Amino acid sequence: MASNSTGKWVERAATTGGGRSYGGQRPVNFYAAIVLICVVGLMLIAYSRYERTHAVVSSAGPPIVGQQWDAGFAIDICGTIKPNLPANNAKSKNFTISANGVISVLPANSSQSGANATLEKFISNYRGLELSQSVLQYPGGKAYTNGTVCPAGTPDAGKAGVVIVNYWPNYESTTAKQPAGDPQNLLFSQGQLITAAFVPTSATIPKPPQSVQTATQAAVSAAAGQAPGASTTTSTLKSSVVTPTTAVTPTTSAATTTTAAPASTTSTTLK
Image (cartoon, rainbow, N blue to C red; front, side, top):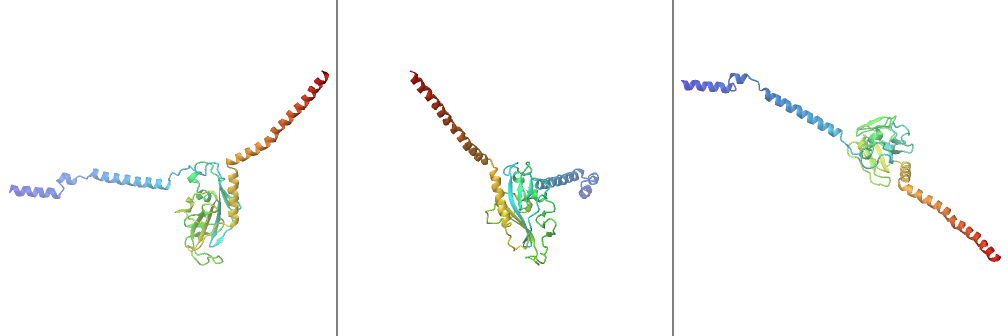
């Protein structure tokens, strides 16, 4: 009998988790650990996302603060190159565009120099201009989003378009490239040409107009003339001007010799 009683007690204990007192106790530490793990996990996810969206970009390298770079820019809507963006419409004096379609990049601090000198700095500071992976809007015009059908009267009428940005590293380049991801992250380079387009995926995107290319080349040449090497040219010119002044010295010396000669002759006559 005792053996049966013991067996039944063990069976009841097993079904209740070890006894009445144990079965009625909540595993608080276990639940607290689960909650803590979840909270820490969410914090790590949030931190990782913040680091990804707020990546620290090096400001080292060109363009350095005070150095000017120039890039040609054009907008193509459904196969039609829009007029050059109006000048003096930028909120920033460090990323501006002239009436001839040339963007001037002149970093004022580390947040605008080096790898921070991106197309976004210009786009975000130009009133009415919008450019992203899915939207392109010429100031004062319609905002075209991916999938919108090009309107009648345009070369690509009736065809759905998408935003595509082509760039050429410099005005002599013949092969177009496309930025990876958001086009606003495109880094500027000296003499670069950029065409932001809303066209069908099969369309051929041209360089900015020849007038913009010519103006870009002229701007780059002008910037090169302001480089430190230009001071050497100036110094050389100054030296060549000073040389004739130094050459006057022999003339003065000759005059002195001429004056001395008569004195010597007069002295001989007296003797």
